[in-house]
Each structure stands twice: as C-alpha cells, then as structure tokens.
Amino acid sequence: MTRHEFTLGYPPSVNRYYRHVGPRVLISREGRRYRMMAVSRLGGIKPIEGELALTVHLYPPDRRRRDADNCMKCLQDSLVHAGAMRDDSQVKILHIEMLDPIPGGKVYIVIEKKEDYRRTHACEAAP
Image (cartoon, rainbow, N blue to C red; front, side, top):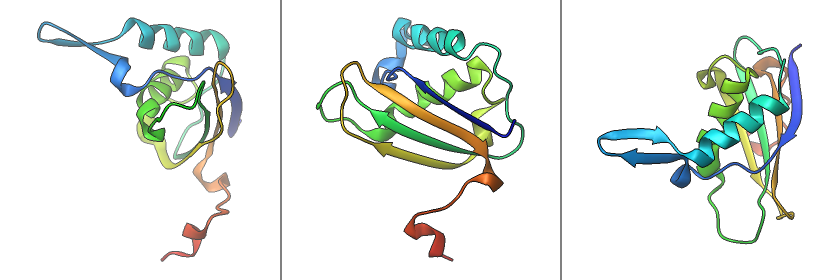
C-alpha cells in the first residue's frame, strides 16, 4: 500500500498538547485522548515506508483564529502512534490547508509515497 486516506477529529493545538509538571514536560490528557482515538480509528493500518508526502485539510470546529501549523505536532505524533508511518521525519512534503469550519471539526489526511505526490501548485515551477 502506498497511500492512506482517512478523516480524524480536529486535533488539539500544540499550545494544549503539552503540560509542564514540575521539571517534566508531558503530553496532556487531551493529547493522549486524541492519540488513542487515532489508534482506535486506524487500528491495523500498515505504515508506509520511505519518504512521504502528507496532505492535511483542516476543518476547524468554529471560526476562532487558528494557526494551521499549531495542530500538526499532535496530528503527526498520533499518526506515528497509530502506525500510519514509522516516524514523522519521513515526511518530506507537507501540504496543509485551513478550510471553512464545520460543527465538531475534522481533518482529512492523505499519506502517500513522495514520488506519487502530484504537485499542482505554483511552487512546482520554482528551481
């Protein structure tokens, strides 16, 4: 399999992903819940080997201002934890779009081999 395509719930922001407990930094309860949801949703998925392209369409739960990249740490860690890829360092192409909100929020994800990714944007003409 050289492509995974699925939806997950909207992930917590990196601002809520970690908690400081004394000198230690831990993944928050909300972050652990999201990881476990991803594991249960993607149970049995086989990781794609090699260099990857990750496409993420974010549909936030409301119209509050959000940074598109703030939820990527939790999302990528959850994908690794669920077995969709071995390590997030495999991601060599990352395409993120923040789209219109939908009730409850969701994330549409495509993971594919880097060589299978089709560049359809202006950046493909860059040297």
